[in-house]
Image 1 (tube, protein in one colour):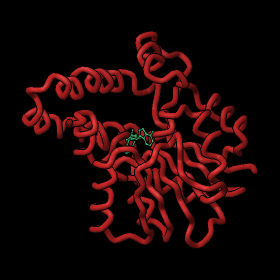
Image 2: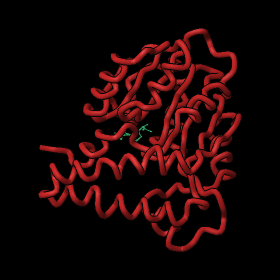
Image 3: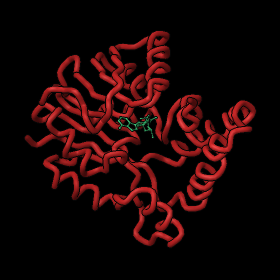
Length: 248
Ligand SMILES: C[S@@+](CC[C@H](N)C(=O)[O-])C[C@H]1O[C@@H](n2cnc3c(N)ncnc32)[C@H](O)[C@@H]1O
């Protein structure tokens, strides 16, 4: 049984907006890490950001996702790359992570914490962090307050924790972390690094699976609507990297 959604996204280099330079900038903001920090990358997908982290510094990364197709691709790419760090992949759900308390120096989550909800993710994952450890999460966020009705309606239906930067910083503090910095991903992190990949894969995907209604739906209705809205309203929302420190 083909998982048409993941089969499409497996073909992409990344499964959400992002940029290696921003991954690196966020990592470089973490001070006084041990020489080989232990990093847990949650919802890693095919691991574009996992590989970026392993290129920057010697580190031990555990990369977790629930889709084997993504994890296989990450393993293949890692075996062919020149990396300073090591990567171990693990199929596990972010809702039930099989780790002891206080195992990691850093938790990393690009475009995935929304699956648990930002607040629930921060609170649930906290116990896996060493005291003073860091959590870095990129999260879709309103960049302005005057959100057009059509846009608010779309995103509120998709994600009930859409909020402003101020609201996210408040959630971070309430959850027992010190907010250290936040970085807003520029437009090219969406348009060039993500949506252009989707456009480029669409034709080949439809040539293979276009006869299946479910597959057509993946690339036609939902994806097109999301891309159209971003192009129209990109000043109003974006991905923001939140960099925070565990206060316990
Ligand atoms: C939007 S993608 C982001 C992937 C990657 N971090 C990136 O930025 O390219 C979200 C990822 O979360 C994974 N995911 C979904 N539910 C999950 C769960 N319960 N536990 C772990 N990962 C999950 C998906 O398979 C997907 O790879």
